[in-house]
Image (cartoon, rainbow, N blue to C red; front, side):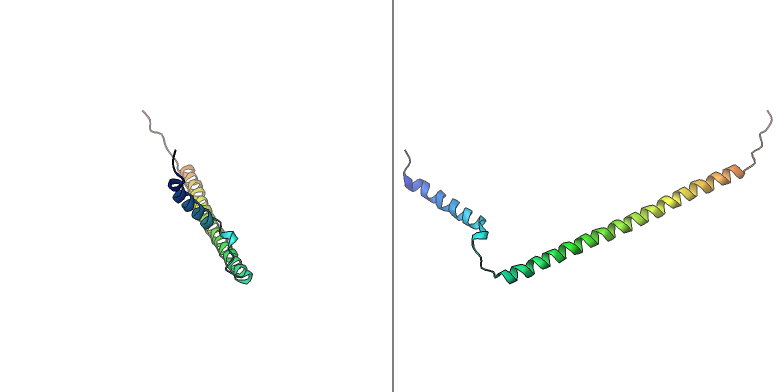
Length: 91
């Protein structure tokens, strides 16, 4: 049978680990500082959302322009091909 002393050190380490994980029990910061921190986090999230929307708009406009250019090239090539007069040679 193992003695209690061999189990004591891992128990202390585990309890310290649990205490460090449970940071909600210790309130060192007043509620006003937490409130401004939350506002800062919310504004940063809003900036990221706005950046993402701008990026999607830019990529969408670029892909739309490329699509329209491709369709224009296809139609203009088809018109040029239809305007050609091909004469068949006799065998």
